[in-house]
Amino acid sequence: MEVLEAITSRRSVFKFKPDPVPHDVIEKILEFGIFAPNHKLTEPWRFTVVGEGTKGILAERYREIQIEKAADHVDAENKARIGEAGFQKLMSKPTIIAVSCIQDGDEQQRREDYAAACCAMMNVQLVAWEMGVGMQWSTGKITMEENTYRMLNIDQEHEYLIGFFYTGYPAEIGKPKRNPLHEVLRWTP
Image (cartoon, rainbow, N blue to C red; front, side):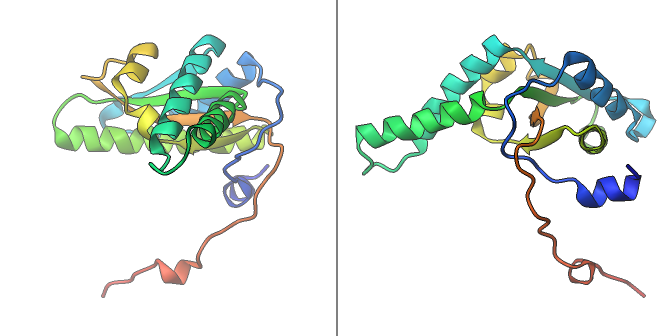
């Protein structure tokens, strides 16, 4: 696949086939993340592949988060359904990869390192797409909780959890939804 084709055809994947992505394929995909540009070669990105046991614990917490988000007027039975849907959503992701970024130095370095880690994430998504693997970059309450950091062995004082890559072989691929360039482009004199 050509780079231009990968950029324009890549989509976030929300539904995956149940087949796990082999470890060697995951490693090959992540290997390309380390070639992202980064100021002063700080290489701030970190990747944590979540094991099945940890995924189950995260899914249980995601169930609780979904129930907590339900409106007060929702009865217990429907809250339980909402929670179960949240649990199943997380468990349906064949592989979860947590992506984090070292947060050392002053504010400017932390901003540059965050941007570099996001560039690494784009590299990873494009390479995955070329290899027939889909990803969804997900954030939210679960990625910000102290217990999540602890489970993933991420030192919250020195590392920022950017989000999860839900990863697997696509069961569905969505259609592109982008505004035309002229709506977001500015030229100055």
